[in-house]
Amino acid sequence: MAAVKPPNGAREPLVSVIIPTLDEAESLGEVLAAVPSSNVPCEVFVVDAGSSDRTAEIALEAGATVIHSPRRQRAYQLNLGARDAHAALLLFLHADTVLPEQALESMIAALTDRRIAGGAFTRRYTSRSRVLRCTCLLARSRNLLIGWHLGDQAMFARRAGFFQIGGFREVERFEDLDFSRRLRAFGRTVTLRACVTSSRAASINQVRLAERCAISC
Image 1: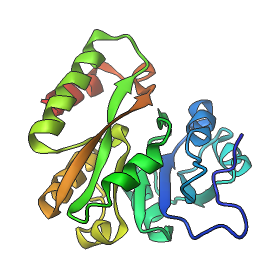
Image 2: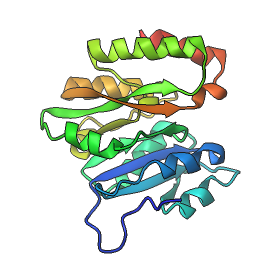
Image 3: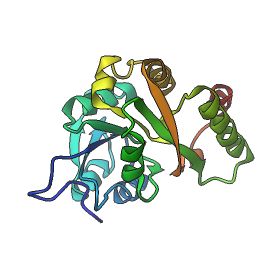
């Protein structure tokens, strides 16, 4: 597996990738393998909330920095990782969401426009579920019309702007939508055409599906 941290002597990281985890051993290796870029030095933080499987070991083997979170709350874990980040650009990645090729380059290219505060990628699921395909179509419409994003789209932001708006509010649900709304009010946001691939559908329950359908509209 490719290392996810720049080698000794490399430039300072341009991007800090922050991945909150809890028992994500099944998918984490593939997610980490898709992060490295030969052109963009990055650092990766896996913020683990006490996994009982090999999540932390897999992260360390891949060269990521593991941060042990005392709380099992995604928003808290994301903020914890952001506080340790050194790069000017932050990318928040779910542990079952795989980045496309040239993802970091695409993100940096979008952020060369100083008016852009952040954004996210286009999302697709590995599942053939018609319901999930529908949410993807609705999400694209929402992105185009109002510029709001969800966490499984691999959201990104400038570090300075992230802290200016207070980071993620530490709520139990939809911290991603809340953050996206505030980021959009703070500055312009973009939706990159490149697609991240999420396998979350494999374990999501019908209640969560219904909620995501509602907020995708």
